[in-house]
Image 1: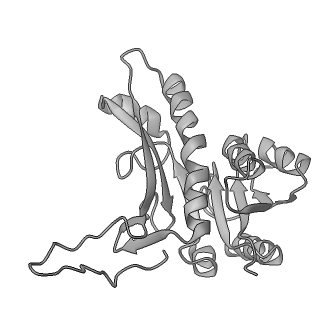
Image 2: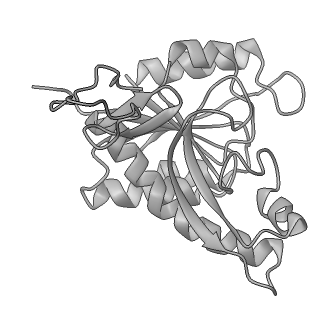
Length: 228
């Protein structure tokens, strides 16, 4: 019998996306089980939320420069995640850059949620960036984490219209509603093994084919599918 997929969460703040993942698990639609949560912030509400729901938690001293995780911190995180047999890592408002040690320990198995339609407005304060640029539509993105900042292959996105009277706070609130909707779905797709990679393009198996059609190719099978 196949073991259920274990998910470890890294969070730095209030933990609302953790709560959305937890709610999806309790509703039986996540397709995975949350087993632990780590934070670099002793004041993070996410730590208490996770503890209240029976998850193992750990506070990590990030060390290193601002925005970075020291090698020691990354090693501690990897050891904790492996102890709990984590298969998939979910960044949920984690305000640190994931380094090589974590990426090598969990290749193509770290998801992040970002409040913009990437590749537009990576980095901090994405809703404010969207307002300053005057875009009419923004949104949120779940992507696989790579060595860049919000540059990994995109798993799923949701659009949010920008209103004339929006502030960064009002826009962020509407984007967050969509984050809570698409993050559990992205986890479900990863856990189910339904994701298929075609270079940087990620789709659901048998629903995406990036090759141009060829004459007299009735079967049109692709050998490029692989779990990210």
